[in-house]
Length: 298
Ligand code: PHE
Ligand code: FE
Image 1 (cartoon, rainbow, N blue to C red):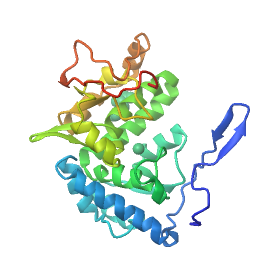
Image 2 (image 1 turned 45 degrees about the vertical axis):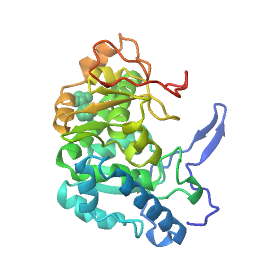
Image 3 (image 1 turned 90 degrees about the horizontal axis):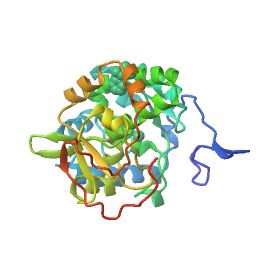
């Protein structure tokens, strides 16, 4: 299971549409005893590096939760041990998976307060970047905030909203995915002492941790639900725009209403390019746009 040469990615199958990923939806036991010394060392290197970088950059809730869960640099955490703390705190459970899940399966897990975590960790030569989520991204990035009661509820509500959006159609789903992207993955939060990171895609990346807060290139714009749900995003470069919430309460309140009429309204409006700043935006910082690719928004 942990042969270094074994394929450790989502399998692909050749079809008339080219290679498509074969999703394994099954929940798998974390093969903790099979992790190699290299695997633990990769975790340790990434953990130590990000923790040092994130002091004063990640929001206090994230850093405190990570400590409270008992994660550290010594070894890859055991899901069953984390589950004891998490279960007692907010009632969430981590379940091991092979990789990305079909949308409806993913939503169903979240709606039931189960968070799917990829069980395998990247190879040592992938320390700085890996395109698909691995254990480090999922566990280090996503899991700590599940300890926060508000964020824990937000994730469950998102899962329920996902099931609903899935029933409405692909456009609704796209609107909802953008919200996930700009909050859960790439969100910034305004703390009393300045902007901090809470998005999992940022905290699990050294480059984006620095870029999101310190680069002059990206826009940093105040959270606005429908604006975000229209905004395209980047999957292969740093974000051109980050959206800033004032608090997790704000995020909860803004996303509480039924999205059904919102989806209907958004269906009549154009999407917004990833790097665009609009007249009615609450701009924390207008990006210089330096280094931006001209195309490639999804
Ligand atoms: N309120 C949303 C709906 O009715 C669900 C949701 C909650 C979506 C929280 C995202 C985050 O669809
Ligand atoms: Fe993620």
